Length: 289
Image (cartoon, rainbow, N blue to C red; front, top):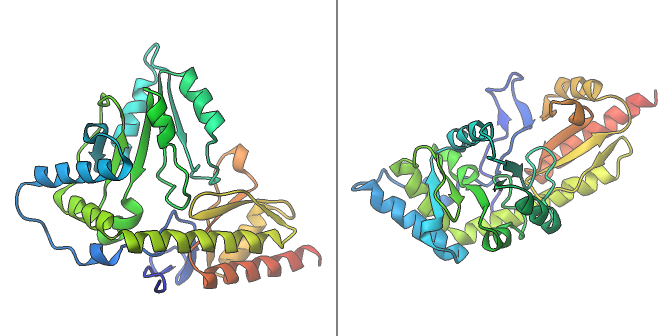
């Protein structure tokens, strides 16, 4: 597996040449097959059907249960509006969670599916764990799964997600454009690269978690995503943020009272992990002075 192709030193940041570890990133995107695609010719509806049948064959489900969508914002916005209707009882949960990386357990999923009319499980932060929620979809009529190719094709200018549902959703939004569909098919065809990249990112997540476990000022949380979240247990988060940003290291600091002591660090490379670990050790020394 070659080195990550994305440049994480981002000159568009509010800090020049900052090490950006604050994003939901895929350090190996886009796959080589995506980088070599050309603008498609012909009827895009043929591409759309091919995407649906290819995904369905991979998952062992009917093509009629696959609903491609350009971006999920419109669909989730319509779902939010639908929640206000009497008796809608729609429950939305991200798994892995986009803030903590926590994965919904089977028991939790079954309980949610039995308690609501419609359960939407957003799996967009997944891809780095070999357990998904397809068994819940197979068992329950009211479970929908939301997945995305964005982390693979967005660096090349594409956007493509899809919903897995036994019934057509009331509102879905625009289907992916033709170029995004071609990029999606290229990603599906380049499965050797994709699987190797998933394994490498998972290994980097483990390396990052182990590095943080050695420190006594932060406590890493279990993660099934391409990042590690941790709680700041010595010092305060804002002081840490100022300290790191002076050194041009940018992490994600989730908003909300429930996450006031939480940081999230992207797992992108051994060099990035070593850099942030060294900075955290340096910050810990200031707490003892």
